[in-house]
Length: 354
Image (cartoon, rainbow, N blue to C red; front, top):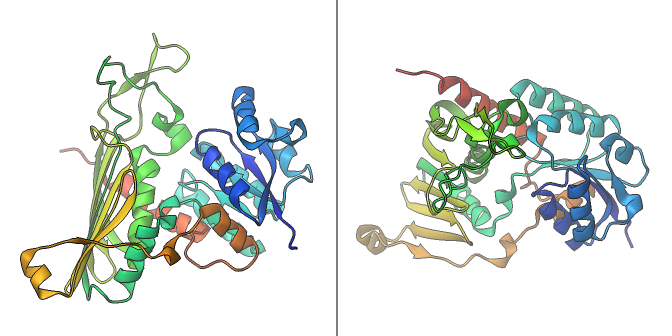
């Protein structure tokens, strides 16, 4: 029986639960260690994972050097991604890295170069690449079923930035509202996923973009002192318009202020022989109108079942990459860098006020 790879989880915030569950479900992985500076978060994930005291660390360097891990999964706030991934590369440890990969394009380029030099297995956690409907949309778009592609439009809407509708209370100032810690707001948090989905589904790169962004609530109360406020210095929404290779007209709308939306996505692709609509809220779904004259003239969209072969798992994909049998569909640090470039350009072009 092949040896299981021991994964060290760095950062025990909300997203780490998904990583831990993925590790525990994989036949090729096992949990080696967990790490967080905050003891309450460490204890919470210790209970979730069944980790022992010996598997718990407050210092990620000590965890990496403990001999307890063969690879790491980095689930920390964005400003820590670069230094932690670089430490993994120095130790030749395969890494899974949350998005956006870094706070700057320059950091992402350096991390890409160093990873390539040592040929370190890696995955960037653009998790929507593992939605079966997104994978099916990719196949239909890339195999010519839609003909020549002219448009791709996307929406990614959440509502958690809004004031509480019952009390009017403002959501506290978490690290996601502080540029030094997060790099950008909705752009990096949600927009990175949408940028990657556009690239993933079409197989094309962006050739030009412009953007508009803004902030709705400019001050938020502190988590540990609700009577005090600090400024918000990142975007609450961003709209990006541009062009991908083809040319394909590309437009996306991103916000944390869409009332009644939880985690809503929609991507529409229009060609000269058909169109598809991928959507996600409670479950992912795919609708099509392809190559059928009555459907085209009647503007009928049909929901289609997703074949089982498109089912996939992010952490199992990481295991497959470590084992040299990845399917080529998971995002890598190269994809992370390419997305970071678009984030940087969108931030630059949205800074103009009339």
